[in-house]
Length: 223
Length: 266
Image (cartoon, rainbow over all chains, first blue to last red; front, side, top):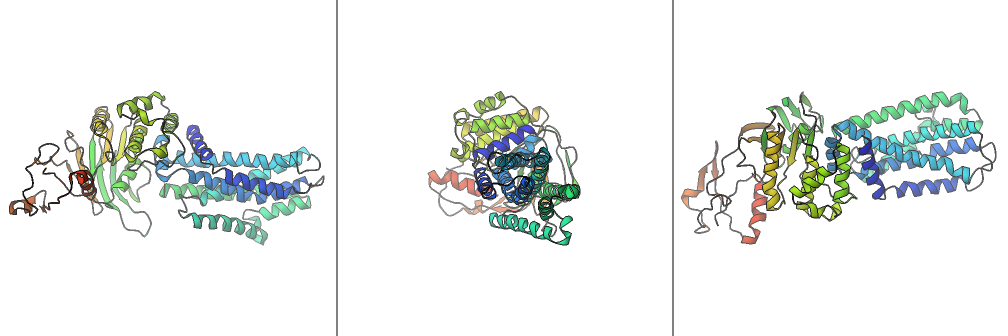
C-alpha cells in the first residue's frame, strides 16, 4: 500500500494542488503571529491555531483525494489488490500531507511568533492539539471530496459550512460531545487544558473514526 | 468465480440495473460482453472486478490478481507514460521490465516518454491495456479495448488474451466491435433488460468485408431478398447506408457502438 500512497502523493505534488492550502496556511500563520505571543501564552496560540487550521487541513485532504481521476481510482483498486487498500491509501496520503502542514504550523511560531520558547510540556500539548485538528480536517476533507460529493460547488459549500457548523456546535452545551474545538480553545486560554484534554481527545477521535468509517462506506458504494 | 443471484442498483430507490444474474466464469474462459448502451455492461464489469459490491447476491471465488483496462484511459494525470507505468509496477510489485516488455509487444515504446495528457485516444488505450497486464492477471477485464487501436495492436491483443486464458486466467471483454468473433471457444454474454444471456459467439457473416467482401451495392434501394435476414430468434431488417469511403470506419464504429451488426459490401 505504501507504493500507492507514494503514487497519490506524487500526483498531488505534481498537480500543484498543494499550493492552495499551503498558501492558505502561511496567510493564516502570518495573521496569527503578526504580533509576538507573550511568554506563557504559547499554548493559547497553539490551541487557536489547531482549531482554526482545521479548514486548511480539510482543504488539503479534499484536494489530494480529488487529484486522481475516478477511472484511475478503479485502476488503483485492482493494482492494489482490493478496494479497501485504495481507500486507505488515499486517507493515509492525506494524513501525511496534513502532518507536514501541521509541522509547519507548530514550527513556524518557534522561528517567528513566540517571544520566548514554550515549555516542552506546552510544546507537546500544542502538537497533540494539532494532531486532533489535522485528523478532524482530514475527515472533513474526505467527506467533501469528489467521490462523495461530485459537485465542486456543493463540496466547497459543505466544507466551509461543515467547519462553521463544527465551530458553532462546539459553542453549545452539547459541544463537548461533538468535536470540541471551542472548549479546547477556552480551556487553553484559561490554563486548564490538562483537565479537559482527555475527554476532548476522546470525543474528537470518536468523530474522526466515525467520519472515516462513513467515508469508507460511501466509497465502497461509489468507488 | 461465480455470480450467484446477483442484483445491483446504484441507490436504494433506483432502478435495478441487473437482476438475479447467475453466471460462472471458469478458469481459462474468454467472454465477450455485448449489449446496448446503458444496458448494464459496465456495471457488470465493475461487479466482476469487485469495485462495487452487489446489492443482492454474492460473487465468491474472485481471483487474487485482477487486471482492468477502462474504456477511456484517464489521461488527466501529471505523469509521463513511463513514470505512470513505473508507479503501477511498484504498486503491483512487479519489475519495471514488465512494462517495457509489454510496450514493445503493443508497439508503444515511442509513447513512454510522452506526458499522458498528450496521448491520443488509441495511444492512451495502449497504456491502459499495458497497466492491466503488468502482473499476469487471473482475471482480466477489458472495457472496449479495441477502440482506437492500430492494426498491429488490434491483432496482438487477441493473442495476449489467448495466452492469459491458456495460463488459466479468465478474460472478460466488453466489445462492440466484435473483434473476438473468431476467437476459439469464446463465450458471449448479452446484457439486456437487467438480465445476462449466455451463449456462444455468433459466427462471422460470410459477407463481412474483413473476411470475405460481398458484391458491390447495386443501388441505394435494398433488394427484396435483403430486407429480412433471419439472425437469431427474431428477424432482423437490413438497412443499407451509403457513405464516403473515408468515413466508413467512423460510421461503422458508431453503428457497432450502438449495438448494431454491420457488414461492408465494397
